Length: 584
Image: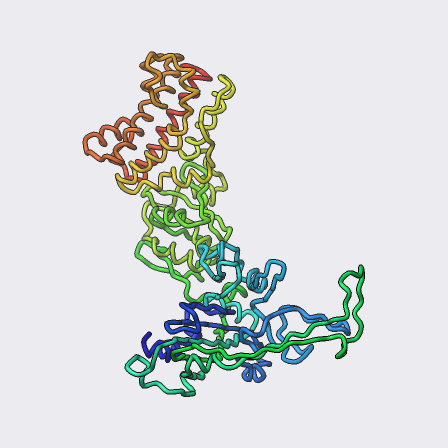
């Protein structure tokens, strides 16, 4: 290894006070080779921490590696006089708690496992949930807040927290975190002369706010030397007795033997570099997440046609009486994130549910822009507001008429979104086949709400995504059709060669005739051809497929997506109507 590695020159210059991740507790090592032989390399890092209130700062300044390092562990203790010290309390003297433990130790002897537990107060205060070995915050796009590392046996090696969340929590409790950590690096070499470590000598020095020591020893001095062993045993126990009892030990009922020798054969030099440091992690007096302090970094938004802006704080008023305009792609941006979903209320309005639990009531206006009441945006969490602000535009196309009907006139429109119509039509058709023929129309079920996040007009942003939307619609309907059962109902001469759509079309033709059935299925056939076009794009064929699906290419791509979903859903609805209802 390089000389800088053993001297830890880079590592000692870095402070955790400026790091992204703060280890609350750590004990992890990496070793290569036999520690008694030349070629061995090892590195160890250990850390411990305790949080202290301001009034205990003076005492805490004197606490170091031996007091709060990895050697100390947070455990409860019950005194004989009835006093009980909870696991969270750090005691400098018995019954004198001065600090707060953020990581608890729970050794499990039955399974021989060392388990560390993050203080539940942090979990609840920051609204965290466990996701594998991480703790995430759903309200902030499932951001990883705490990471846990375990070895192959399940023993904890490290628990670290992202600093911005730690100092938010510390501010809410008015605590400062005292850290103490230690790093050791070791390499066994054949000799010093002519190598990287040739000029090194033993030393102890204060460096970068910590203490560094370099120790150079022969492996013989470390592992060699003399040894002695003694074995002592009892002679007065009768092994044939059913319940033997031993008396007091004396020279007459004991015997012993002794042996000794020397450890030798250790060749080489051990180079060992160690560094200790104590450090404070301070908060900034602001706790927006835990205490709900005002966020001074919130964005502003365009509210007027001349580009005039207002701050989020100014808009955070139910009586503000203003709406905001956004590009429609904002919906896709959010739905692509974990925990977000869209639920439709009417043909042009819906609710965007976020991980914070809030539902943003939005409407689509005549210019294909998203309009939202300003106060609803201003009450979102900071990171969500910044995402909305990035897609904020100058007012155009007025406020969505259906949104105004609901929010101003208190008379929601009696219309339905094309997405809902499609899925409801599929459910009705499925129910008709089950009732009329006693078969399952689809091979497998789907989650309508989850699938609607993919089958949505917002997915269509250009021709490529329009074709992809067609592919998704076909996957949801045509690819799920139960071909085996449909063949039993079909009377077509080549039914064994027909695909899912053609089989269903043939069943419909038995009821309303071939030409009429072909007309009903034209949009489904067009969408299917568009799906093929997604994989094998050729201009003229794609244009024919889009035309067959009844999509007007002069519209915006979002409206083309809406029309595609509408026409497909209409075909599904007519299929059910003609099969199980009126045939006019």
